[in-house]
Image 1 (cartoon, helix red, strand yellow):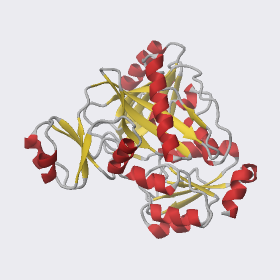
Image 2 (cartoon, one colour):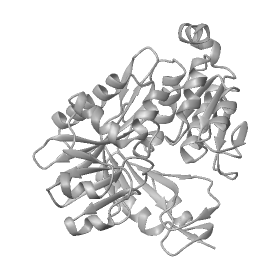
Image 3 (tube, helix red, strand yellow):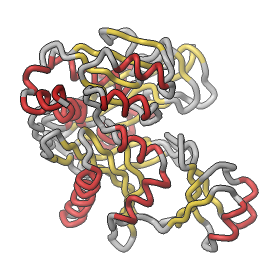
Image 4 (tube, one colour):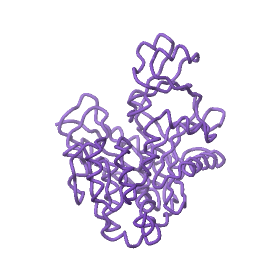
Length: 390
């Protein structure tokens, strides 16, 4: 407790050369490191992939399972502060590290809650946060007993990500194909737009939100293809979305980043879909588009610094670079030079050596004073830049 009290009162002591532990060495960790270099941080990364994107840019890289108690505990003992870039981590080890005085942000009990989408849903209900009607089932046989409205959405309670662990049940006949694990049955919402708000909360409770973004998803793989900032919504809807995001962050008491994905219904209501307690795909555009990026803001939050300005410098569109269907193997980027010749284009490649269909290999942000111009250029980028195998 003494360690944590000093950290709270004197965060300046921890800035220069502070050992920041990051659980997860993917592209999110990579971009955290790129921001952390500006704060003279010493970055320690743990990842199960010996060739993870963070391997060659981290000060220290450890190869180990994020769900293994001993791997996480022993890694964490060498850190001054611990954070995550993925939710699927061993929370028992993080709780023990926290008890021993090592700050862990977001806090382990919050990660544990968000790991289970069923607990997420119950949390929304308990705190009067609007979300789609749902029920929890342990086995597919319970669906026919407890749910009558079809079509509906079925989600695995745990370990679903990037479109995995989600399916549509069009009728009772589809129940035979349902997940054979604890799941959520959720009402299918005929939404008008899919929105997201990223909110940060620091150690002292200061909060700031980034402007609401709008997302377009791949029709088959449920992955974001395009992201638009600012979203084409009115001021009242934007305020309502931001207020809901802040309400969730405050109710959780989270320190760090919370990405809140939402549906805007055809009636103009906002319903929360899911949250993530980490930097997020819906905030990548902030590197070029905002005064402070989501990655710098996350570091400010977990290191006890004042939060930065989230003002939009220019409208931005983000395009996810996904591996082309039918291509697996060493990655090659076709059309890179043509895209780099376009105005307002910033390319971020994630350091992944091999590609496979729909794997996230990078992203491109297009900024322009006119959002429509940026939209047109983003479509050109999507059509030109392809990730293929050699």
